[in-house]
Structures are given as structure tokens and as C-alpha cells.
Image (cartoon, rainbow, N blue to C red):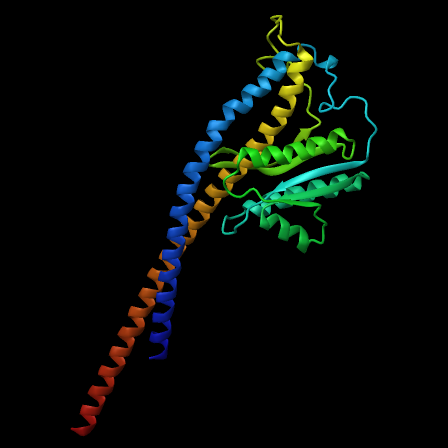
Length: 291
């Protein structure tokens, strides 16, 4: 009797978990659909800004802009912005991003560099707290990145870079390529790398352009805009990757719960049948004893 009651309780618990994970899967699917639309909407703009920068920089070796680098006194400090998630239940999303970021940090420290860590997302913050790694700043962006918020973060980073406080700025995030492929990546956003002719459409175009206003004025507007859009695209990619990995994780949990539920139901039926058989045997034995 106790075994049947215990199996029944487990069946109820598994059924409840299955309903919860199914609901979370549906929510993640809806958020993924909205996030991928935002990412695809911003990607052409980001690529166009980069192509404009390449078109303006007809001779990359002559670029003299604070965001590109140039002659500057090194500070020996690098900044790494790590983009994690605020919530869990998204498979190996946070583990892959954070492991990649920590590996890069350790490698740079071995070279004698001082690494400044900044985070976005509670999971990244908790990870570095557990690892006893100091976090210089925490940025709250959420799962619906707003351009104004991300642009404000980019402006702060650009100001610190131009002031010479840091030598490089990189962002560790999960780059979204397709529904089946997300890659943990560390992307350098400062100093901006001068565009080259290798593989770039603008770089391979030998047409001479006349710009109004002049190239310097255009770069003063385009380069900061390129930094902001690159960081914004990284946040958007991170959100899409998070939602799709949560959707996959919750689907697997739902399927596992369904399989466990079927197994428990089979065990319950066997235990119930065994109990009935035992009772029938006892009744027959009692009747035979009385006869």
C-alpha cells in the first residue's frame, strides 16, 4: 500500500513539473520569436555602418582617430564586459559564456595585464562573486535591450578609452548564427580595427569618392556610432541565444518528464495489480481454510 501511495505522489509531482516546463518552453518560444525579429532588424543597420566606415577610410593607414588607437601611452589595463542572463534554466548558455570569459581573463593575466571585469546579468555577477573575482561595474539591460541604455554604456566605455584609463575593451557574449548554432565569443570593440580590403565589399571597391563633409568629420560621427551599434548587436545576439537555449532546455525537460511519467504509471499499474493478486490469493486461501 505504501509503495502505491509513494508512486502516486511521484506521478503527481512529475505531472506538475511537466506542466511548468511546458509553459516555460512556450514563453521562451514567444520571447525568442520577438528577440530574433529585433536582431534581424538591427543587423543590416550595423553592417551598413561598418561598410560606411570602410568606404570613408579609403586609406586605413592614414586613420587618426582616438577610437582607433594611434599613439597613446598604454595603461596596462583591459576591460571585459561579460553578458550573462538574469534567469537560469537555459542549458549551458551561461556556463559557456562565463567559462570562455574566465579562460580569456586568466590568459591575459598570465601575460601581465590587469583585467577589469564588468557584467550584465545576475548569473554573470553571481559567477564572478563565487569565483572571488572583483566586478568593477554591473549594468542592468534586461532581456529587451534598449538602444539608449546600451548607447549610454558604450559612451562610458569610449570616454574611459579616450582618457587612457584602459587599453582595450572587449565583450564576452553568445553570438547567434542560427537556431542550431550559437558560439561563445569575445569581440573587441575598442580600439576599433581599421578596415582592410580583405573580404570587405567596400575595401575591394577602388572607386574614388568625394565626401561632404570631409572624412574627418564623418569619422567623428561614424566611429562612435559603429561602437554603439556593435555593442547593441552583441546584446541582441545574447538575448536571442539565451531564449533559444532555454527553449531547447525546457523542451528536453518536458520530454524527460513525460517519459518518467509513463514509467511511473507502468510501475503503478504493476504494483496495483500485484496488490490485487495478493488480496485475491489471501481471500482464496482463507476460504479454503474455512472449508
